[in-house]
Length: 164
Image (tube, rainbow, N blue to C red; front, top):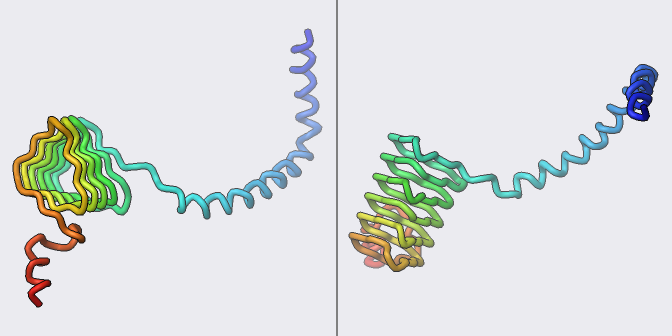
């Protein structure tokens, strides 16, 4: 009975409040002006990582200023801020990123400021890094070279630079 009276009461009040509803949009307008600083802080917030699912196959190069998580297959070069190669993922190409975590398979050169090969990683190619961590169980075939700036264009160019 109490709920019936509430159901009946809001109906007439809603009809009488319809002129008051324009006052309600005025209240959201200040709320809309409040979120304006929110979007200003939103660009400061880190956007979510782009994720390529396990059933996705990409043929071509990828470039992002953000983070990428790969669970599928990529045949091409990848450039990103942070790259995570999932356990089921395969990347055939060059990787250049500030931070790289490899759980899956990479066939090609890897360049990163901070590189981490987990126990499930399989890497076939050279790694050029500033810092590296290789967990027990990781499979790696290639060479490892430390450079202060591993993100520079080629690994062989820094050698002539000191000669100049």
